Image (cartoon, rainbow, N blue to C red; front, side, top):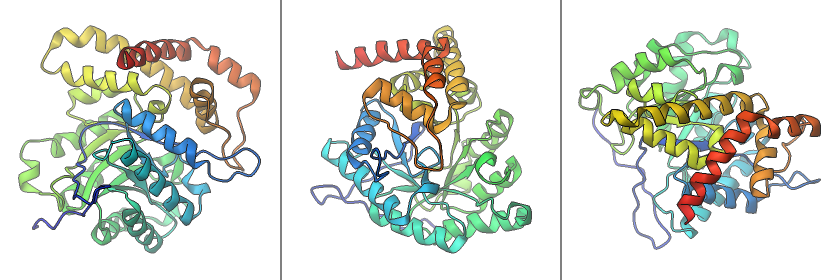
Length: 349
């Protein structure tokens, strides 16, 4: 499998820019809407993308947290454009963008992926539609990511999220086969939360020989194994995982980045383990509690902390006021808010 020419990226000054896909923390950025009209609130999106990136969190635009299912194609492209422009204007030209491009059919997914690349996405993450989940055999699922990755101008990540795909849950054997056989696949997000699955996949793709035996089409895009939550970042590091794409990084970006740094550091400096375990406990409890409040709860927390957030787009309901008061007062939430304020204060001082 010969390497192909990298997807070209051009910065604000016209220079060619490489934005490698590297281990770390990524956040599925919410799509913000204006009160009443539900029109895109592009200014809030721009502010949030830059806030997260300055904390070391890289953006995933138009994912599940971004309510991609509630967006038109043109809206998805608009927010990718807006995110790229905001990052460039903030001097964050090296920060890559992942875009969610999964749709109902293979044909439409390919089409949207090409549009996302043209709009400024460096990578795309693709979920299988669950509408006909019962008819999608292993062979059909494999063919789906094979065709999308082969026709995409940018590297593709596999998105394994049974809760949003009609219960489709890819096993470690299938994901590993895809990684070996299709060089334009650049990783997987495991929102199944299965640490054993992560361990089995990493046993192959994180081995030192993998990149030479199965080179990627784009050498800037090695095959990463990313958790879909922040509650197993420390165990993931010991299994040679590569970080996480986590909604909690929208609420507490500095905290999640610090946990990732500690988790990586522990492998060479065991003295960091007690602090990594302490922080993992705080993050794990907060992730469990906040995830149950879903998109509306996360947006309400962002509103409380940063002054923007708003409501989800219908038919998703807003979080009830009493439920939000209970969420905000919950000790798991207060613990991570305290840590986030401490870490963000140190970063800005």
